[in-house]
Length: 312
Length: 251
Ligand SMILES: Nc1ncnc2c1ncn2[C@@H]1O[C@H](COP(=O)(O)OP(=O)(O)OP(=O)(O)O)[C@@H](O)[C@H]1O
Ligand SMILES: [Mg+2]
Image (cartoon, rainbow over all chains, first blue to last red; front, side):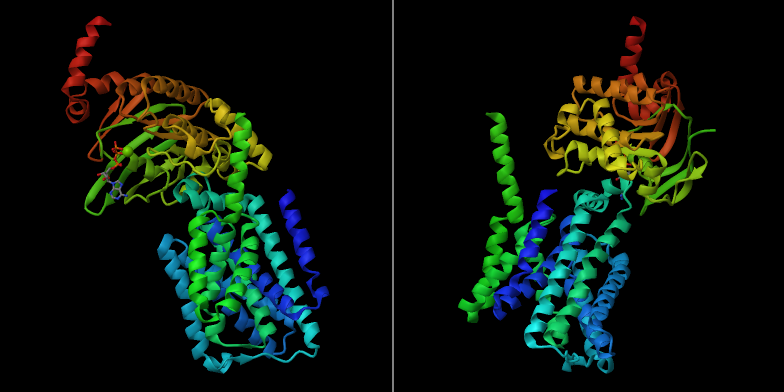
């Protein structure tokens, strides 16, 4: 019961970031919150249920365009964000029912195709999306500093909502069912678990706040184009962050997001020309030496110590 | 009325007929033995009853309700449980969590506390109390088989299908398993027992059904089965018949 409370306090402390008055830090804070939304969401389908989803970019891009288009129609910003999240969830529900009976890498490939298809649709539906030219969002009448704070707090709020959803999942019946499914799907249905239903629920949960984050991102950056919001990196990053922190754990994805962001920034600043390569090597190394993530490694250290104490 | 009834049950895998037109009716409270050589179709029958496969033709009826066409999770919730020939625990979970899963999802425990109580009862019943918090992946084979039994008990089944729960156990472990099966039956659970050890089948079952190449070749009381010509040829072999005949005068 204690750990989630500590996490919530940490979120509250991070929420004070605007007090420092540093724009760069505020931008990083917003990035962190966004990454935390994506990683925690992926953790539900990828970590708890063990289904390697590559659909994050599909939900994110769908959300970004939904939000941008609705705002273009004159919808208020928060309403556009909510609608974007809901549409992503409906999309996940429909697609999930179709592809979640696939196992392992077949599911991974099918989920990867979702973003590709949406990218094609978005690019060719020029009248609605602006096609390859991208889409500008309505201007907000607010000072730059006030906007930066607004988007930071909104994104952080979304990260907290995602955290509360993860908490609900990990502590309850859904998380239990998903952990069973990850370990042995056939045995799960034999002990009475409606595996199809729980997998679809997990997939929908992994999409809802990602769609909203996509819309928030669109509002934040003012201009979106298909290759940006449907980028493969949007899919890869949350997976790496979650594995780094500890897949299938409550705090892992949040810790992983923070560390990943720091690594990315340091590498970006110092190795600009070989940025991708250095980042790739770092990721492979970390995953190789920390197969259960940071949370997993710490938990194991504690368990070992506990066992030693028990013996003596 | 019989609690479980199979009618014309048939399962084809491509050209292979794994189960061929099997009729069987099981009365409540019975322990029925299902025997036959390797590949006879015994596990496939279990898979058909529990919804893993939808039969190519034929029906499965449980307390007057059709099971064929239902999903495994639906059937397990209705009160038909099984153990796997190859044990299927949730390896990263403790014994307690493994047994809580069916208590929650199949037996429909209303709270976590109630699920834990039901799980603990099944764990105690099978003598796994000391291993309650051990990870399933750390259990020995005999312990895993008992865990399978505990899981299936936590479903509160009316019919229990036991697929070779004794395979791979040593004689002492088999004695223990035998006692547990008897104790489960004494609670009123109807049991279908798949078993290669004739000694176990003979001592537990009131009725035996013999499968060969997917078809039922014999059905009857244990002593009728051991004398049946077809069964001796297909399964028991002359060695068993002779040994049996040699033993008889001594009894
Ligand atoms: N999923 C499947 N796909 C194709 N063939 C199968 C499948 N399951 C079983 N079979 C085949 O059906 C036949 C019956 O198999 P089954 O496992 O039911 O036998 P069994 O009586 O349980 O044997 P054993 O005593 O070895 O456990 C075998 O020839 C087997 O190869
Ligand atoms: Mg078998």
